[in-house]
Image (tube, rainbow, N blue to C red):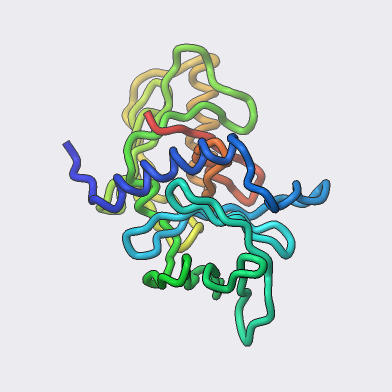
Length: 227
């Protein structure tokens, strides 16, 4: 059994709670939907031992920490982008590149960093979609990101393994190798599509429903959920 750091466990528990909260009631004064055609930018951050979910949309930001949810608006700052709860500067988030400084009700937290590898390493991710084409019924495609920089899993018929590296929300996968079991027909085609998409991955994100989305600059994408 692989050891999971306490922060990873807290991160996952909070992620489930945060995504559930996103589909429940919105607090008064919450941000309206983004303009048509605009996509909110979602990031999972670790501020010391506190995992938070941030959603940036125009000049507004939604911050979710545990069961609490705050809607902030951008204010003037000397550098980066700073957001505060309107009329209450005791809750703020100051974004500087891929990091940030968080204050909630006057309490300052350690510098926030992308959860990145901790999120990927949370457990086995089961792929549910390859390039928006779904996957074959009763087939199994998985992703396991180890804390040793190795990724492995099942590609459809064969097992695979390789190396991966994370920098912020950037993800690269290399040195993929597979077992040699025969894999023909639709299953073979699915396996080839998966391995090609995985090898071309350049970034990752978490959807509003908690799905892991691996994206390639070519447009290929993999969608997976924790088992």
